[in-house]
Every structure is written in structure tokens, then in C-alpha cells.
Image (cartoon, rainbow, N blue to C red; front, side, top):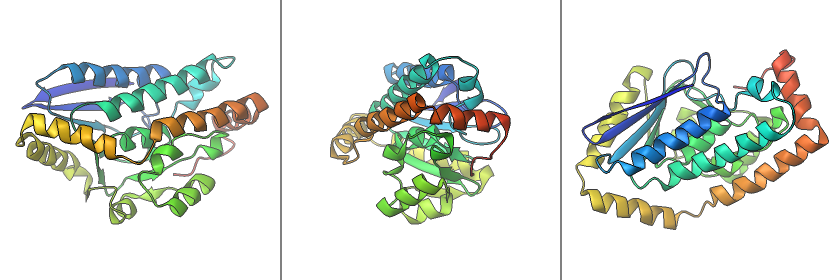
Amino acid sequence: MSIRYTIENHVAEVVMHHPPVNSITVADTWKIRDTFRELEENKDVRVIILTAEGKGFNAGIDIKEMQSVEGFEHLLSSGEACYETFNQIYHTSVPVIAAVNDFCMGLGIGLVASCDMILASSKARFGLPEVDNGALGCASHLAKLVAPMKLREMSLTCKPATAAELHAWGTVAYVTEPEDLMPKAREIANLIIQKPAAAVRFAKAALNHLDVHEMHTNYRMEQGYTYQLNIMGDGDKQRDAFVRGDRVVTR
């Protein structure tokens, strides 16, 4: 995956790009974490926009890469990379806006729920195909985006929700046509940089303290069940089926 960023007028834009569907490798995940660390240290940056180009905002983990590696080392390193990356985004001291251009699946949910605001194009879909993959993960983060019973439906059926649905529930701030997504994200970022910089940083810190969703603690619990499924062989079996094309993950 190509992870690049630009900075203009105190706004950093982080762009993910990995054709064909922006699935994410372990190296990709660490790179996102390191990019946010680097931006955190740049005191000129006052807002960050996280987005992607091409088909899909994020298709989740790169299952083909995972199945090409023997043993559990890759699975464990992937879990650690996801945990560290979500945590880094969440604790970045400036506001982070997710601009979701297309489908957002699996660990993509972890990325956007770790941000402070979500904008989405009308094409966007949000879902967790984890059960299809013999795994758990990011229900901890989806719980921040949907109501409790909707969380259960989406987790157990792997059925995605539309951007319009999440907008109606108040968790997607704005829904735009695809071509208007980045202009809208930049508009919101420019509103934020008009505010006193120190006050914005303290406001974000306070909002994090007020957050009732213990995403990172609960995500560790989900990872434990995922590792148990792999010890049992179920996880590997489901991922092999995906690689062979025996089933299609719901999008």
C-alpha cells in the first residue's frame, strides 16, 4: 500500500492507496501508525484528514497475504499493528477527520471509529465481515457508530450499513456525492483551524476523557477470541476458503 501525506495551511491529508480494493497488509498498518506519529510531532499540523483513493476506503486485512505465511506470527503481528494504529489515531492530539470514499470493512471500521469525525460519500458502506472470516475484531469500534442491537445484527450477519443509515444515526457527520467528499472534508478542516489551536487540542483531550467507549480495551478481548478460533483451526479454514474464492464476503 502507498501511504502518503501532504500538508497545506495546517491541514494534513493522509491518503491510502493499494489497488484493487485497498486491503491492508501488516506493513501497511504499521506505516499508518508511523505516519500519524510523524504528524503528531509536527506542531504546524492542526487537523488531519484520513482518506483513500481508488476502489474502497478499506477492504479490511489482506487475507491473501496472511494465508501466504506459515504459522501464527503473521496473525499476531497483524493484531498488534492494528491495536497500535487505532490507538495512535485516537490519541493524536489534533482532530482527525475520516473521509470515506467507498466501502469501509473490517479494520477500516477501527480506523474511522478512532477518528473524531466521519464524512462519507453516498457510495460508502460500513461493515464487519469478520465472522465470515472465522475471526472477531472491531465490533468494539463499530459499537461507537451504531445502536446496540444494530451492532449485534451487523456482527452476526456481516450485513453492512449505508452511509445514509449512519448519517441518520448521527455517527456520520455529512454524506456527499463522491466528487464533493474531499472539498467538504477540507471545508470542515478549515473551520477547525479558525479556532484557537490550544483550545482545540484541549477540547479533543477532554472529549477522549469523556468517551464511554473503551474501544482499545475491548478490542484486546476480541483479539483473544480470534486467536482461539485460529488455534481451533476455524480461522485458517475460513481464510483459505476466501483465497480459493469459495465464498464472497458481504459488502
